[in-house]
Length: 93
Image (cartoon, rainbow, N blue to C red; front, top):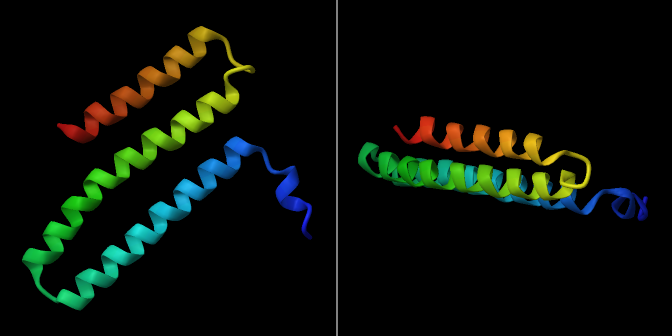
């Protein structure tokens, strides 16, 4: 059981840790919304989550791309990077 962590790739482990942190932030935000029990504060908390989500997305994708860099050609990495950029532009507008 101890050795299963040794078999997990470093990039995957980094991505998993970031997603776990993101999930904890989401759960904490939901708990705060319940605790404050006010729509205006819930909207403020939700707005802060709108900032955290894209940051986690970019960091997770960056770790994944670095982990796959030796397996993909430059053109494919460029296309994936453009896709992430388009997602961020779409979310922002």
